[in-house]
Length: 168
Image (cartoon, rainbow, N blue to C red; front, side, top):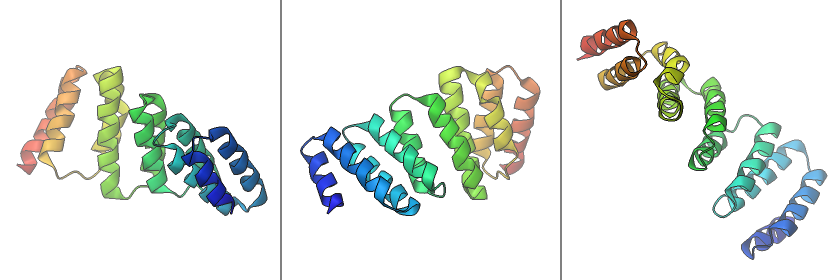
């Protein structure tokens, strides 16, 4: 019943009433159910009130950390809002629980995001994390070399180019 009331309140734009319903429901249920409730609320808020969706998803993740798809959605929403520092922090948490193959992709994204918004030297910790992964993609090593060159690290650039050449 509360779920329907919450959905209806959000559908007609009564966000304050939805928030009251959500808080009341959250206080009455177990932690796991509360996490699902906050997650659902964030999903409903995401299209029209993204800042509130971020907050709702934060509540859900605080109650139940093991939600990789929600963590990714939250990070992507933060990026779309231009909240890059928060997105990078979320990316760190994503990497902690990611499978080995996915860690490289996430670290590469972190390097790109850092370089894009803070300059090539800000990508250094992400590049170190990326280079520690078993990479078998020559194009990725070339991208790493490019970031090292932009950051003024010729030795690291040469190492990355050598790894790319070994894979070609």
